[in-house]
Image (cartoon, rainbow, N blue to C red; front, side, top):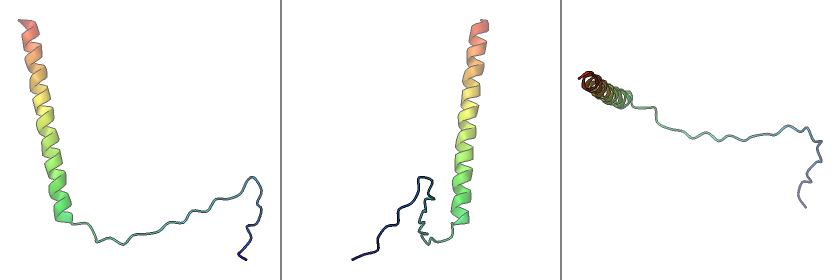
Length: 62
């Protein structure tokens, strides 16, 4: 037959199996370009939002 499972108490330790997947090292140039693009887009959105707020403040004063 097969191995019989041992009975364990209620406070047993659970074991996890982790399999690692080999990956190529990240392309630093590509990551740098992506991060710069994201930062530039976010800065443009923030600048646009600030301009919209300034327009609303000016309109409310008139």
